[in-house]
Length: 300
Length: 297
Image 1 (cartoon, rainbow over the protein chains, first blue to last red):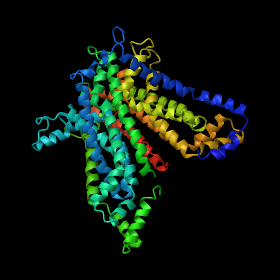
Image 2 (spheres, rainbow over the protein chains, first blue to last red):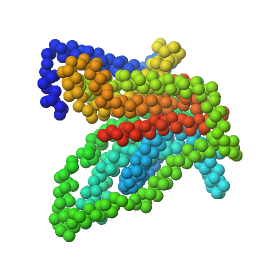
Image 3 (cartoon, rainbow over the protein chains, first blue to last red):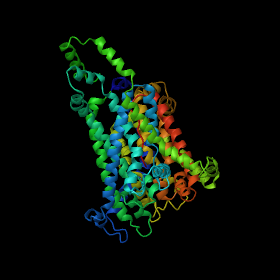
Image 4 (cartoon, each protein chain N blue to C red):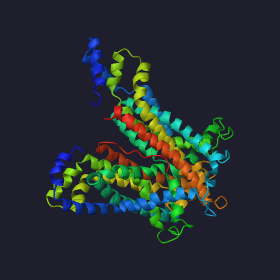
């Protein structure tokens, strides 16, 4: 701690008083501890417990995880994987291009408006976004009809807003601005001097990209993709708003298992939730590792 | 410069090799580059703006029309609906309580971790990141197992039902509220301020309320806005645990009164946007890492 020397003088006061204050300070952490225990730790632990117990008999079992061995039961995971991957790649590359355009615009006013607009768009998700897209690309949507007038029959051509492809298009709407927001800081931290140095040494544009820009930006880029991926994989509200529960992706499947009448099986919901959490943990953990690596170059 | 070893040396070496390149020439070239926006960048930004505005335009075009003519009638009908009032009231109530709870609990915790329990920092930071690993859909399952209808502690069917949702929202907003407050705390010298206040005879509580809180006020406002807007727009927990909040109502009304529904979708945007734009304005005033929030919850 940089302020350790400044603080040394006073904090070395009477130890008895310090201990009393320490006790009261620990007491002040109690509300946080209780809330976390009741609404985060306890639900998580009971979820893990529930995933290893039969919902009806209460016996210890691994059958809730049987989905891992059945190709048919893994369909929601395959769909979620496809949806998340497609929307992540779409959002990732388009978002990167927009972020670079914002940086290249070199005008503070453009940068400010574009950044604010991106945070607004990134927060435009869930049920409202679902209905905005129904108005735009639904069966009777504005764009659907305009395209039909122009001779392009979207739905005749096999497009459905309520399918994995449709969900990909809708998810991209928040994935793109999210990518812009997370890639702006590393792009802005790229120093013009690096490029100039490469140019002066005779490097071509491609050589600069390959040997300087891409190696430096790779960690933040992959880290951002992981964020986008986790975000798409765990998303429920947008998918539910669009399909009211009729698209086989993991979050929807989980909700059907805890709220459906016929499909009610909390044990299996717990096991699916654990599977989803494992994917999330890999993404978030990977991000933490990558962020440490990129901090070396891009710390300001 | 944090990395003088690479940037500085390489540039100097290059200038030494190429004496023809003068510093002034490079500066002139540099300013020439800073003034002009490249054509491709303009094109990308314009296309992006159109892409992002299209769904909004479609929503407005559908919600503000009778089918043929422009009218604000669906908006007025939607705003006059009893269900809209009660659901918005519930959402605002839950969001305000969540916000107050988050500030009242997270601020002292973050302060004490910074000042007195630095060893707990890793644990607390881990706990505040955990909600990212456990998205709302998983939290909904966990909460319904512990406090649901089939549980011995059936909170959902009791008078204590609001506690469950607010507790869930506290956890859900924790990554944002903790980060916002912690950033603000780290930007001021908490130790020095606290010891100065203590040496003048202030109690720890008084120090926190009269010295620390005012010096992290922007961080607190930012945390409050993050908590409030997250709770206002939250659908997953509310829907699966059975609370008739505004986003849940929005889904239902779109099923039977689509024009009113789409008009209210715009209302919901403006609520979120007001919060997000306020956050952006605050972010501009505060240096340091910005908190990025986005995506579906």
